[in-house]
Length: 309
Image 1 (cartoon, rainbow, N blue to C red):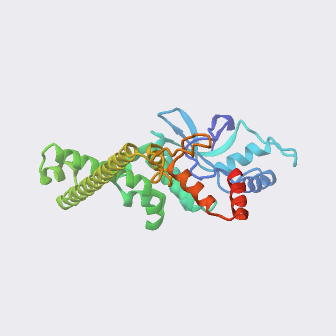
Image 2 (cartoon, helix red, strand yellow):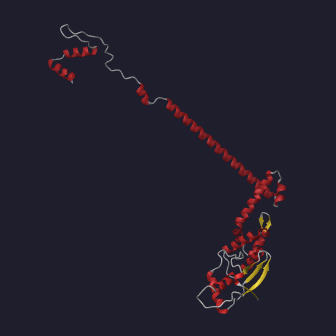
Image 3 (cartoon, rainbow, N blue to C red):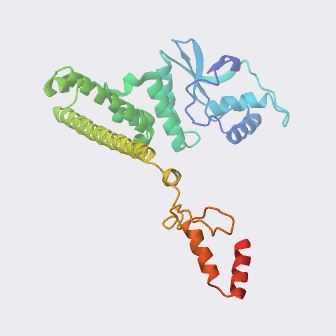
């Protein structure tokens, strides 16, 4: 049996593959059990990672945290030897190796994994050692990942959707770049490591997208020209309207209507009888005067009264 000081173990190591970390309810249950028996049914597994020189849990995060919790609580009296914690011990060359080992044991026993835990495991494996889980430069090794993580095909697809999308976009970009450089489809397929049919399909989609984009641009340019032409016509109409005189201008510039009496006013001077004062009167005035003189005395008085008003 190996022992190690709890303080030497990195309890925040990337070998913790559960999405939400430790479940404190489970930690306390294990702590109470340890307080009663002084041991665990199965010892926690700790490994030395040679590339970093640190000790990390491979299996047993909850058990190690249970010991740590016991030393910090005041609920139950218990003595814990933090300098000599019993463990299973092993060594790994890299952190990636340690994570792969942790992924395997995490799937086999312990607290049941949630879907988010499996997703977290796959993402972490790809972060630390993507090359190990690639079939080729642009394709994940589905079989290897499922073997290590021990998950279903459906879970694999959901957990790797984002990464697979990134790889596909990277491959498609590389194919179109090589095509622009003048390589044949056969040469591109050989260099990329995929079938010529795949290359052909990608280039056809690119051509279709480019054509669609061209048509959209042409339609936008035509619409822009129509709008510009419409604006020019509108401006011309406004200028023409401004050049034409307004109705008010017509009224202002028009000559004053002639007096209806002007056709009979010809400035003919009529002389009074020699006995009355001499004065000049127009033809109209003469006619009015003669009209009044023909009236009766009563009507004449009334007419003169109206004229005075």
